[in-house]
Length: 296
Image (cartoon, rainbow, N blue to C red; front, side, top):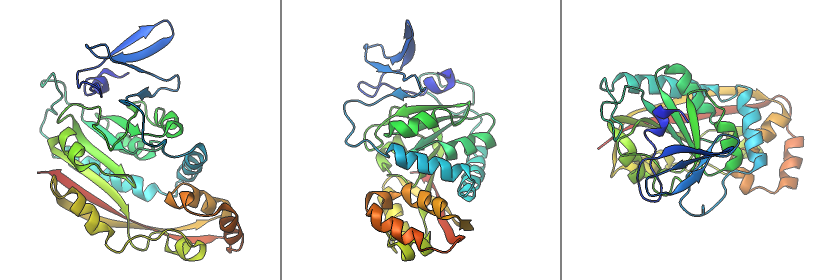
């Protein structure tokens, strides 16, 4: 693992630093107290302390997301995050702290909490040539892809509802894209000068599909609820809505539904019937909020 990333990781059991160890062909990360965490042959490291409460996105959901994102349909989100992260890193002090070596060279760490396939993390790293990145997710199928998202990125199996396997104040930019938010832990791992970037759907996101396919709807007070959930730890500093109009094939529309939360709540047979009735191209509005927060 890249030492610039390994330097920021911490044992999820005891909080001690981690080091890479090799025994034959097996690789692992170990702490001074001999807690050991296997590195899978696909490249990600399992940093769960115990069992995860759920297994995250399925193989099918991850494949749908990978295909859809690879076609560029959500590049508006990638571009918005890359621009916001570039601005955030530009405001950092010359040296980003990383315990236990405060004089560690300025390689800002970008963490994507709930990274999925790592597509957004890869886009941000492409815009930040001096940064390194870490993808965190609880889905093994997603992490197999995230581990290859960018040459300067690593991936770890971690439950973002629990203590994150990162040093205090180790992270320059924390991404949270359509994923759960752990305000207390996000605050702990962010550098005091760092930035949390949260992407959530705006009220008319995918409105055409929501109406035609009876999908889950965005709560009208979604933005306020997100800010309130972070309010004890963060102060909002920026907000912007980004939009794009898509023209999709029916299979692409099916992938879009299959990669999101409606995949857990929609009857497959009923969904297939509704999709088959849609005229092509399927016109869809992408509307997302990108909100920036600073630690209090």
